[in-house]
Image 1: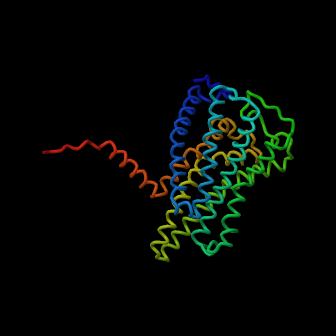
Image 2: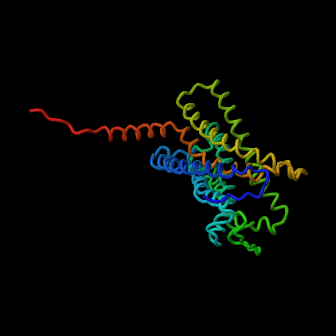
Length: 317
């Protein structure tokens, strides 16, 4: 199974194996859930055409890349103590997914939580084709490709003489952390990481508050029932990000504020790992927020039950 070498004395000997087992179980269960959610959103015409599901589809795709590539590579490194497989292509892809796709999912999560305000309270902004083009599709493309394109350049195009090492996670650092100016590193930390993490709960909480206030004033059962589904969906997903990412952000802010050793003993073995958990939980949060999916699951289970319950009939003379 591996030796699970640990370079930190504060980590109990049993913890790496427990962590590996928990993540492995999460991967095994999350991948079928991803596929089932994709099938529902892409197969159902109404779900596929709903504007609020477009960002969810891309968000799920990005997190599926993390679950199927980034997380297994990380777990394998923790298990063995070295990168396997180790070659330049694998290292470049790992660095890109771990940075560009992970930050891209974060940007999409922020946009999803903000766009819900438009889709629920300012539907006039997406009422025409031209308005949908700008306020939905163009902004969706921007938040989808913003950080991935940055890291395509930093990982695949820019060369700073980095040396890939088998004994270092991610095969070593990318050019951003080797020779980039300090202001660019700070921009990446604050704009691409801290700001979205802090704005996601703000957008989600204000969305719920606005919905509750408007619901008391306006009684439009059908419309508000649909809005409630959108709000439940984004609230569940946002909560996942808040629980597992905000602790790491708090430690990071304190460290850059002058207390460089604050939380250093728990950063890498615990907090950094927690930021990978949302990729496992997101498909389940999406599943719970869509009633039609639950109906499909019940129908699937009943279909299998009916298939097993078919017996040859008897005839009488």
